[in-house]
Image (cartoon, rainbow, N blue to C red; front, side, top):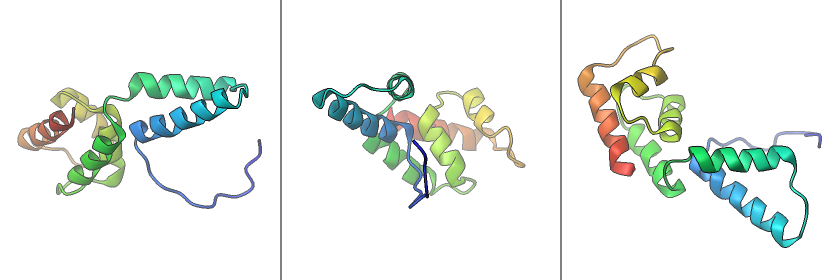
Length: 116
């Protein structure tokens, strides 16, 4: 399949992707169409790595974006990976030009824990 043009772009979290892929899978099963290898692997990956429901992941992103040193890229990465410790969170911030204090890291981990 060739893509001719991109009509719109929107950031979504991995749990939201999982929901969309579940709908696609259900449609394919209902119409008895064969799923491609890539689609099956995408569904498998989304199911294995999603750690929260889609609505909670979107709420988490919104709450994270209210924090001072939070960029949209990082907020979506945090929602996708749901870090449970300071070390996991530091790995997400590793490429940034600034570092967070222990209190800021703990605050973010606490917010994530509220959504799990």
